[in-house]
Image (cartoon, rainbow, N blue to C red; front, top):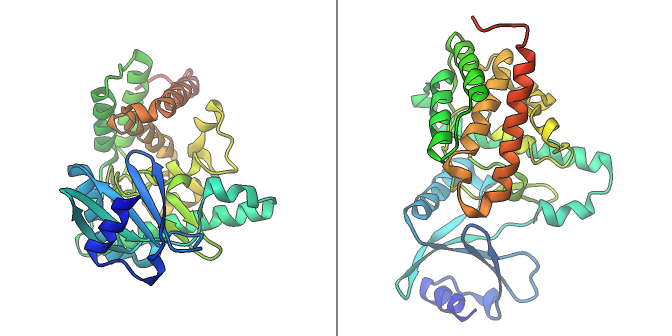
Length: 309
């Protein structure tokens, strides 16, 4: 694409490795251009068009995350203009997205190893964010965050049927008497699609949803639901809060084990708010609604012989 060459020329990023660049475009929620040098198999540069306030904010978050997390995230090179348009440029990273890598993962041992590395990347990411806020640590109040997620759910046009309200009342009452928990700004979409996996390193990308919430298990649930080993049937997904990795990490965040399911309830409601209301997530939103319905039905069964106080 000729505009890429002009952009690199005007930004001063043209060099000998890009004398004959090739460009691939990935059209996700916005076009992303991958610039490859001559005979290179991994991108040297990532170019994203910056159209609106949300994308400006995402670029700012990218730079902030690199300051606090180093090479856990791509290196930002700057924001540049060409012909009245604005572009964010990052240095490319080595590795592959999961959908390209999974064909090479042929054994159970290899899959477990990669999944452990994914969990470690999530831990490292949150640790970097925690270090950055060490001098101004605050805590979240779970029942207040649940109320916010219900409001987000309803703001996206979803109705709250009686059974949802019944479970929400139960969740609110239980969370009301639990301690506050550690506040950690969440990535917002910590899933396989946003991890670039190399032999010895995983890079976290796409911070457009950063700080969608500070509830500490939100990213963990997102990752769990996309793990290669996870049975993504609706009934099993509704039990994601029982995943062994989730159980093992809650103590680090001050979350009472008995309330993990309500953190998952919060996760589902927030995902079904404006985040998934756009047309590009229609199928995922339909699946999430089924998971939410199944979760509510399972919880109602749990409380059949345990009337509300």
